[in-house]
Amino acid sequence: MNQEYFNINYEFDIPTVKKRLDERVRSGRPGYICVADGNILQMVHRDTEYRHTVAGAMFSICDSSWVPLYLDRIYGFRPEQYCGSHIFAEVTGMRKYRQIFLGTDSATLEALRTYLLRRDPSIAGMKFISLPFCAVEDFGYQSIADLINGDGADVIWVALGAPKQELFMQRLEPLLDRGVMVGVGAVFKFFSGVGEKRAPKWMVRNHLEFVYRLFSEPGKQWRRVREILFNLPSIIREEKRKSRKND
Image (cartoon, rainbow, N blue to C red):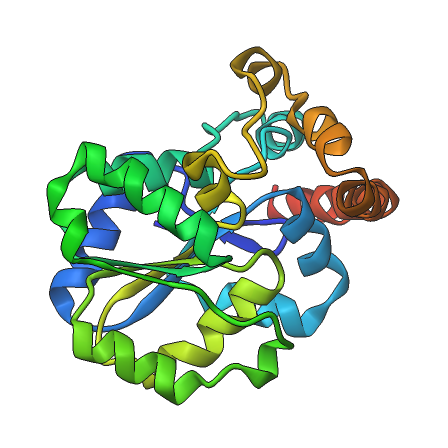
């Protein structure tokens, strides 16, 4: 069952995430899943239109290692972080679903395809599709949907970065016949070995991944961290008020 905190409908239970994804695939109804990191947390807080987009997902998984700490402080429980890289590795490793890999550039997609083929030879028959760099309203949604519908994919991985990938999935969903989209940001680059890499495990364990990302992509990440830090006090105050109302 989804639990709303910080205006995001989270599903924290990892087996339930996989069960609900599978149920949705078998139902034949399209949908999308958000992978909510700290950047999405602050955008949902300050942008009501984007909040509606994230709320329209089947649910969000918790990609932030700090949100569990905030919840522990406010409510006294600490859920498990479930990153985009985790759900990507686990679902692609199941060898269960027909998948499409959508977004980023052709070099990254080709390297990702090579990596995944080593794990699952059936990947050879799946589509890896680069998307143009454009505003979210300028994508050719009907042609993208026609391609996906013709393929019959069960799971559609979308790597455009937030907030574009969530807005993209919201616009594409009504045009799909079936399939669950999952917005995974930089995950294609992590697994392809091209460009961005995931922080070392010790940094992830100690909630320091944002420091690694800051030095890896200073121009992009400093702006995000500044926005998160600026909005964080009001995000936490608002959630504390909600917790007192529910007592």
